[in-house]
Length: 104
Image 1: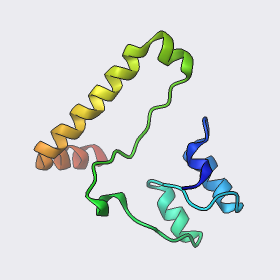
Image 2: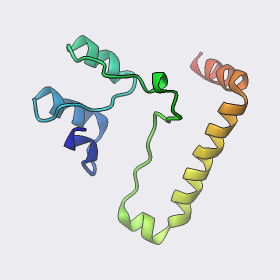
Image 3: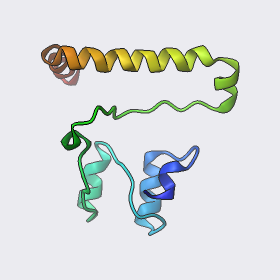
């Protein structure tokens, strides 16, 4: 794993740019950055979908102050994400239809 995957405050684009400069070895990217990475000559090591592991392609970042002073916000977000994953696993057709509708 690249040390850039662990950098506080660095976004996916900043980490990718560091990778391009040879400052890291690998990173995880999500669309549309994955298309840019292929165009730039990087190789796909694996697709998370192919691993048959539950994964969410989004993140929420919070600073330490928010976590300490308003922990309920973080707890509610994690709970909502878990509920969404559960819904998708139990209702794949409804989830696909929802994404298709949103993507139009």
